[in-house]
Length: 171
Image (tube, rainbow, N blue to C red):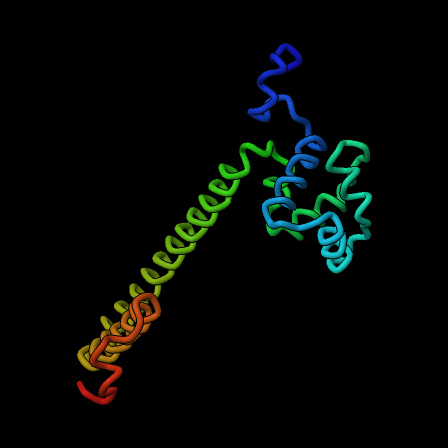
């Protein structure tokens, strides 16, 4: 990596963790319109001892940053630590990666939920096979319960139907 030309520094290729943090700290602070004192106050409120002079010195490469401080800055700015210490120009992409992780995690959760639903439905069907005398009533109960849950889920996304607000007891 030492062979990479200096002009590639802007893309974040040559930057190291502390240099990234120094640039990122200044970018995040300025983006919020905060002074070094405001950042210092927020760090202190979050339990990380920091004075305004230290913030300025870190931003300007005059002082090293320790891991606890980096964690504190990431917390104060509301970003993940890997995002905060990564190359500043890649910050938006790092946020995209965090969001991708969220989507993949949610998808994984839906897959687990679908598998759990399939197991529960199979157990229910197996039970009804052994008790055909209650099949019809049980199917109605489960269908109604699932329909109610589906309506609640839809309403949480879209809000209640327009006519439901004017007359909530109307079928």
